[in-house]
Length: 125
Image 1 (cartoon, one colour):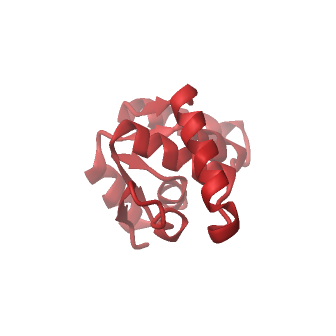
Image 2 (image 1 turned 90 degrees about the vertical axis):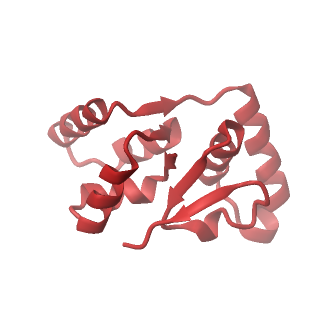
């Protein structure tokens, strides 16, 4: 299972449902895009250090972007930018999920559900 950025944001904000959901989803992976988005939203180096420790404790696989993921994301943008306002980060995360044949755990399934080949599990905060 691949966790979307929003689920981990809920977790980091102390949401109990997110805490239970994340711990139940172990082991899980995240896209490097999710990792970058989370780090960009941190307030200071201490918050970052705690996050790094948590990622290590969870033994989280951070999936890098390769040629296939890039090509798929490019297709998603071409296909869905005008009809569904698809953004770069969502396209890269969706491409990662589909390319890996995994399920995406997200509270923002509306960002992805129009992609016919993606499997999403909805998180309800």
